[in-house]
Image (cartoon, rainbow, N blue to C red; front, top):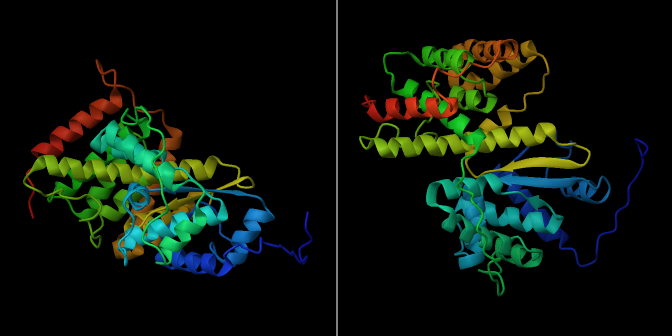
Length: 366
């Protein structure tokens, strides 16, 4: 064990591109793309000294959980090259891949490919997975050159071997989040209720009829707020084409699933061995991800922190929203899970069916 005031000297390979990596790390940091599932070092999550110390002294593995848009852009850059200047999400994806390869980080994209398969089928998802594997195959300098616009594409590259994985198979975590997202959507369409009443109704339903899912509750706290920019969170909800509205709800459910998977992994992983980081170019999603790690083990402390965090969206009602969520969490810990409805074998599926029918037939107003 090192003494508190000890000096550590680390000798990097003479060919290690220090300045390039520093520049890319600074750009990734400024972009707000990464959300750590741990308390970052005082120097900063992506300070070069912190990166080197974690890799070569602590020898801690870093695992990146990217959302679908980040992964798809990584695969597309490998397949088609990049047109500079790239759009913001594409540049974020390229920078992240370059940094990950330079620092030997692991990228774990499983939820992203389940989402793609669910939307576009196994064939499309498996093809893109092949290109992602090609992209993620030890070529740090090539990615650095693309990130810094010295090159528009990687050297000769071939997709990884095809797979026949059934990534479109239902994921329980997603199905639960979809049921909640449908309820959130339906409440948003209920213009007879004020925003605070909608949020209270959601939490009451979670306690009485479903599960209290933290990431879904936080998502709803932002989406149902009077100051939220809702368009990007559940797309096309008020479209007259109700199939488009349902597609928007499914997309939101995947966003929540990325968040819930991030929380699960971060809270169950041994921090001394592995550090989990979520990656997204979606600023609203990144903001939500930060809220999932309020640092207090007691409900009263959590409630105070949450109230302060949601103040920009709820104003004076932030205290009530935090109380609703904290009370729901406390109630869920003390009660048995809701029992299955008589004659219903798939309770989650039953809730999904009820929610889809309600959203599909709800005529949007306003």
